[in-house]
Length: 283
Image (cartoon, rainbow, N blue to C red; front, side, top):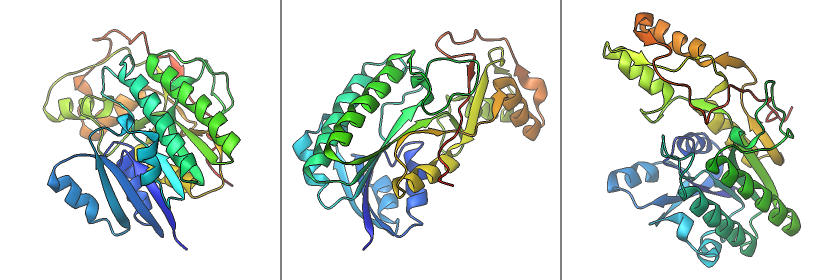
């Protein structure tokens, strides 16, 4: 019998890639989406194994009873929804709403006897370190966003463990790729250079663990269908400076001359080094 998965955040940066991967697997998909245009709904309906699309004004304001009704006959829940407005999500109180809403969703899962829950975390939950971080490394969030994510993980871990529900928490590192918001690093550089304009950047000395979002979508989809549980680092494990990443993009466009490093101050909320040790491979 085919497994039935419920996916939130299917129209988001990460959620789109999870859905794309799941659409190629032998599963049934139920989507929870914000009320959107008919055009977007039509696109989602054309995915062959989407069996239901449920609309809501704000999923994070729905009650546990609402979720229990939507999770009926669901085997696996992947919660890829969260507030992620570039430039504001680090400090926004919307993170608290997302935390509360995630707990309501968790209670709904328990009431409906969901078998597995997959949540999306962030590498910012970890204590800042100058060396690669394992999945069980020290935790010390440095923004409200990261604190809300970590709090969600810790509460869900206790809740699901008590009720015997499998739980995976996917901590994402630095993503780039298809569907990325234009205010983020890679689209910003690409758009500026394509328009013959200078890309004003920070020092670029910060070391990051970059990974393509399409790969991330595949990994999360596979984790949902596996027996892999606990905290999982979704990363490449390969350190790279922002300067190197920017130069690689510029070389592809043959416009290295338009990169201006040091034009902006380094963000004090961002660590100098953030690289993970991946543990998502089941082999």
